Image 1 (tube, protein in one colour):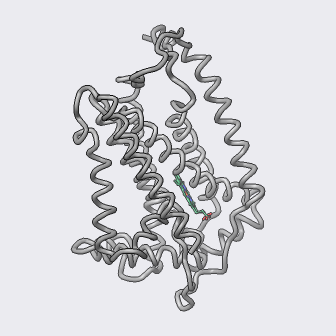
Image 2 (image 1 turned 90 degrees about the vertical axis):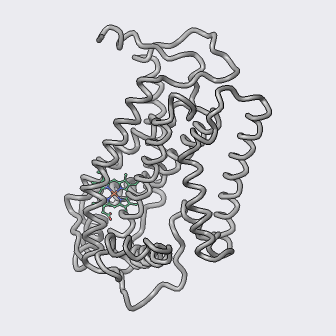
Length: 326
Ligand code: HEM
């Protein structure tokens, strides 16, 4: 068994884009590490959250860097997960027998979003407060379940101590275990079924050894990206705004970048239409393996699938840029 693992090989068709999923796992581990360091000084109460974040930035040795890495790393992790899922879509690697890999991948991306949305509130500055309050209003507008979800997550109908504590508990105690469980299933299914062979292309070159060849390249790629991320965290350190003041609303609050397309859609159509479009899009993506279950795909079918994917991504980018510009 051990000898078999040592001799495990990686087929020649496995190119750099197949590193994306592994890199996402590595950067998730970086979030866990920096998050644990932040926990040492962070205090989750409305009287102390902002002050303790200021202490992390100004007084703790390299605290500003750890915080910036945690925040910039979160952006990067979400981007990596999105590009990884898109690559899986383009190569139709969600088809049988990899339906569970696809489903757990989507769940994992949603868990990362939940990590991000709960984390953003924690510094308790004006942006944190009003961005989270905007989210509360958007969720409360969802018919039937909206108010119930808000009451459970916010601990009431307003954002106060109970909400901060719940977001913190989700961020550091609930989501990490949920993520670990889903990640384990995701990785086990990849290990079990292997990586999908491309429809065309070179499957004929000689395979590389998983250890050390593949792992060395992977580790180098991780180090280079980590260096770039560190540089971004040093050159553009994350600022801390004034402490949250529930009596002074911010005039304009931009949502997190990945919510911008949905936010812009809300500006163009009514909130119920945007909720239906968003909900349907999520359902289609989740059930893609069932909706596109044919065994072989014609060249025309492939072109149509790729065109749909590219158009959807282009529409999201357009809506996002539009939202930031106007
Ligand atoms: C076990 C894992 C994690 C732990 C223990 C943790 C812990 C923390 C703590 C203590 C803070 C508050 C400190 C502060 O506001 O600077 C924080 C903030 C934050 N976390 Fe995490 N975190 C974890 C994983 C993640 C992940 C996976 C993401 C994103 C995908 C994330 C995104 C954020 C964001 C965006 C903030 C706000 C940063 C800021 O503006 O200061 N965290 N986290």
